[in-house]
Length: 439
Image (cartoon, rainbow, N blue to C red; front, side):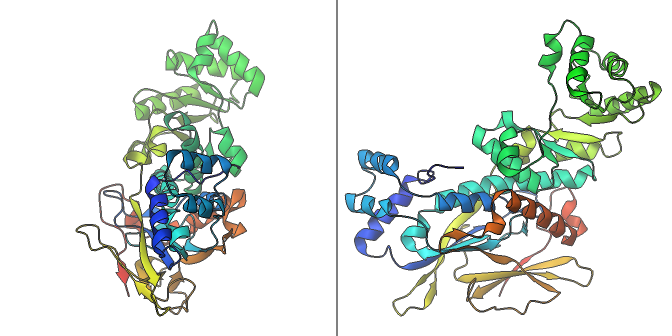
């Protein structure tokens, strides 16, 4: 992906830089931290997503002639600051939780170290990526857990803008979805794509049978035929008559899904199509998927709910200055004290305490030297370090970006889910499944 990401930001990031350059504080070495004060209401864990996208965008966060001319015309900052922006590129350090990691309130998900000016200017970008992608991943992970191993595909592009549709497909795949309908997500991130036909294809033809014959001729009998444009029972009979008993699958997009799925399964078996699978769509979310656990459903397709975070389209993360260098060169912890918006100052590191059954029991956040300093805990088989070095001197670690980074994040998410207590996967409202402790 090419193009500058520099104006994907709020105006006040630049006006802060402008004022800090004027008073001489812009170059103070600082540490910013992205974290969530709480999880979306009722959720028991979160899933980190967007990290690989963020690293690539930080590398592209440059002010070219077009960006500078816009800022000059709008008189956003002084000319001296425009000169500084013209030479800007992030040259600092970024640490954080691996993409695909579970997180909890207070987890130091991403820390950005550099001068105040070069780090504060990234605030909007960091939050816009992590808040959306992690919201999608958190919802998608819940759907995956109640799908009980049945394939689940993301198909929500028409319920999001064109850029977030691609980001959502990526986040859902990391969280365990098996495929996406979005071709750009497939091209950009290496995600398997799926899709056959919509109701309009059936309506185009003079009969449902004509539509099915055309699709089978183009895609073979292993295709998936959408059988609910008119009458579902008649659609199933026509589908098997056209494609034969080797028909790959039928898709149901309407009706009382548990009842309809059971009737369709019985009908397929009566017709001899015993291996034909049933895929259901129709405004699914984690609760609807859970209600289909005992139904004869083989696969799910989810749209609106996954791309909107199933009711929580943002994960509620914030980006705060937590430490800066003092006049003596030592780090000084700083924190907000506002009511209901307090933060914990200081450089931090984090680990997860694992018990003898390999189950996570506690999130430990160590306040002190932080990432890049000396370890403040002795890592062993009962204490798993959580923070990794994501970017060094402005260069992203290649392991976390591109399609390879997506595959690694997906694999890591699967491993992490095995650590969480079983209570994490209950859909009922509840508190975070493990506590966060500061030390």
